[in-house]
Length: 287
Image 1: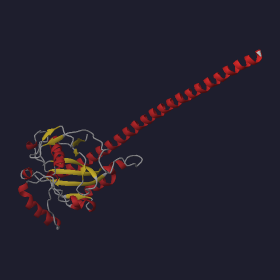
Image 2: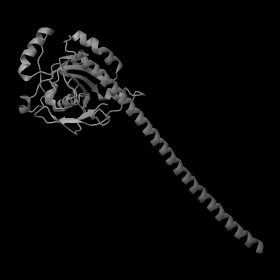
Image 3: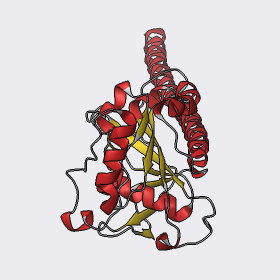
Image 4: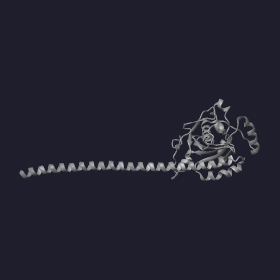
């Protein structure tokens, strides 16, 4: 009987030990699993931030390169000589072929409203084709009587951007703020995301570089103290700009511009005049 009793106690102790070992092993396995998950999550977050930084720097580099190319176009027009459509094509073709994301490069001279009809007539005679300055439907009637015109008069490539030809960029508030800020700062400035005239179903942005007549003192600070001769414009499709990143992955949603990289913000506000510098999300600094 004694031996049987001793055997029974041993058996119970052994069962408890086995149970403890199983539970402890399961607990340790769970803790190891949680720790591994956290480690993998941390590594994923590090990779995500590294990838995001890489994309950001790549996009910024492309915008900087585009700004430099656009300044070259603007500087050419600041020399004061007129160029025809063929010369403009030669001037811009290198930038269009080597800088991904640019939909078009445009030239928009600054024209006083009183000179609009004579400018249209001269342009039609020079082109041998119809040319009509068109305003945005989103324009304040009172402001339209005092604001100058910035009609798109040269554009490349022409075939895919015909709808923007003749469009008055200054008649639309977001575009006007970017041009006014570019003139005020004597620097390249870009709009916030907008719908392109030549591709209304696509989100895009415009980059503006001011041009001034020879001899203009560009160090003056007021918009009224330095009158530009026009603006060189680069139009971007946001999807194309982001898709050009390493790996070729699309980074923007078709339904909105949530993935636009904001390099900074500066705006010139005021729909009824040439504008005053204020902090505003409608204009991006490119620097």
